[in-house]
Image (cartoon, rainbow over the protein chains, first blue to last red):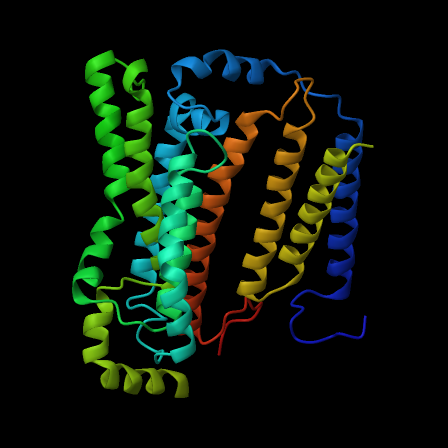
Length: 247
Length: 102
């Protein structure tokens, strides 16, 4: 009650109204959830009866990459769009150009990075049988990339140049496989039963690379390739920054 | 009361907290965080209700949906933060103000 700082744009009455309406909504939703009858297992039985033709043994992976492959295809497209949006909103990466190398993080990286890559590969592979797959593996590898950028380990020029292109590998592979299955079977993303497992693994491997790179780029906040030129013009940029803040 | 019902109710409460904060705070980063809390509530609700089926194991379809949703939420958050950075760069503030910036 005493915290009346400038943070609250809205007056007290609006706050009260918001509290009351949110409370009402939450209680109605809570009551609905409380009285909800158990759902039928129709979808579950549908998934279970089609597991044999899915090419994998984990039902979540089967839904994600086979039965509802469309969703995942579009989702990887959304990830790519978000990264491109960040590229256009922030011209050069926020993290890479401003930090100095830290010896402690460097040592930690030396110990952790091999395991991060190993576990990433394992999680990708195990997705066929158990919880795991492209998104989990991509997130783990991205953790490695984020550690690298917070430790200010300089990415080499080749990595900086290829990262923006590698973002698209997942989407391109997915679309190529989808179009190829359309030519063979006549349906978009309907895999031949015998090759379904292999195709899913190929898509997932490409998606893992894309997801890990996109998540790393989203963390460092901008096109890593732009950091090369940004570093060259660092002094110039800082002068412009100062000019902006004084205004 | 089963444990999955408790999780679903916690999800509803998180949604409420997120919505309230989204309306109340004017700082853009707080708004983005509020949306994330609300989104987490929805994910928790979906995963919890997936366990409330008549079948023996949780329904895999909502689980796959939530997995998709989490990744989209993360990328949308990153884009929103980048836009907030840009707004801060251009206007000098990351708040929504009622008056025109001077």
